[in-house]
Amino acid sequence: MSIHSLIIGGTRGVGRELARIFSEQGHTVSVVGRRPPSPEDRARKNVSFWAVDVTDKPGIKSALAEIVATNGKLDNLVFLQRFKSDGDPWIGEMDTSLTATKEIIEALAGQFSEARDHSIVAVSSIADEFIAHGQPASYHVGKAGLLQLVRYFAVTLASRGIRVNCVSPCTLVKQENQAFYSQNLKLQQLFQQVIPLGRMGTTVDSANVIAFLCSPQSSFVTGQKITVDGGVSLLSQESLARKIAGL
Image 1: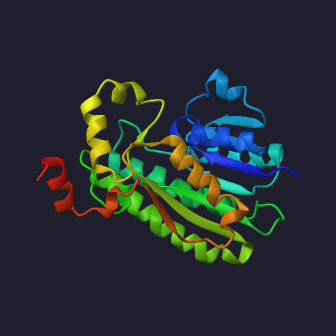
Image 2 (image 1 turned 30 degrees about the vertical axis):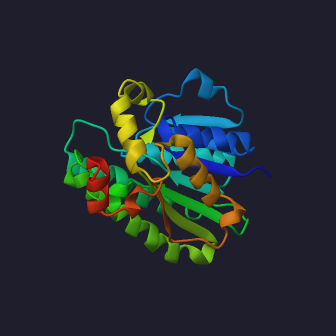
């Protein structure tokens, strides 16, 4: 039987790339997103889309039931949704990042297949540990809370054979911001200078790590966070400042 992977927030960025990877690996892929998919994405083999906001509780409940009824029980569940709205950022972030994730996991915990190894991956941000300039307090607290939510479910769902992990990427080059970075060569060069691996990360880099956590190769990994940042978080603030200043 085909592996069924559900992606929450899979029509843009890392989620879009992950849907492509899963499709090419032969998964049955269900994608939930607020935005409709592009014609290219809609044409992908074995990929189905449901347009619904995760904070719409009746809507998401109905969509999840339809997804299981249509594509069968789950093997993998990945969370990539982000709060982007003009509403209250604190309430919106908590509802989108934490409440929705918790309620979807609880709703689907009994809807995984009979196979022993299952995977849930929540995608956070390096703001779960560091302070990201320009992002509000709600973003930082929401991402930090997501990591602890992952640890909680890693323990409570372990007896069901469900592994739960977290991926925390840095700033990534994606389809939506590629033009911006292409037109800002100095900013690109700065990233290349301070990131130990010498380049900016991409959606493929992050999606590949998620795919690994959703594969048998990670079958004894749970409750962990993998940071995808090219090694920049390993450097002290002093080291970064001196490197940028050339001192």
